[in-house]
Image (cartoon, rainbow, N blue to C red; front, side):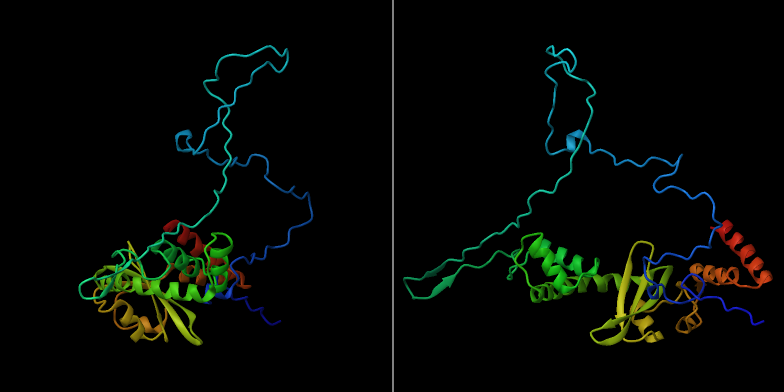
Length: 296
């Protein structure tokens, strides 16, 4: 009989995790039919409750005192030292804060020259303020919303007149503002003692590209390059002499530097042994995984 091949997944091989849907449920072994559990919380599970906001931090506090006994209907007096607290969280009406700057133009009576007032130094020349620009960049960068969805969110929920083309302009403005601090952090990478580096396929316009990341103890730097060669690594990290690099076993890292294999990849290799149909290989995988758990 031919041996069955183990199914390769991001958990037991170097297949990128991005190839697997983030909400894909792992296949569970079929259990024998018996008494099935009821839906919901099981007996003995810890209760999870939402903590109340401190009273002094609430925007409004309404004290409700009963006026008569619920049984004999006689009047009640006094105040409960420890009343039952019930809190309702609600979104306030969202209205953008708009400031209009009226630039007066005055004519000189002596020479006939017309002079227009200038905007203050902190006021942008466009219609987008710094907080709105940062929030729009957050929507498209961190929360990965498209230009159209970001414009829809701003206009429908925040009541900010917006179009997809305007979000493109805002995104360019945010990128320009981040260029200097990004370069400052990138140049600091070569001064670190240890870095965790990885790369993942992405797209730059219509071209295939690679998203690189270098993680230091206090910060992380991302960079997009059109390849995953050693030249891209040097452009990101710079002169990384003496730095211990934690990485996978990609060949561009083999340049005589000090390397530490990524334990996530080693754990996947061990998991591949556990998933083997060979009993001896499976037993070796379980022994190695037990040592890995003890180590961490």
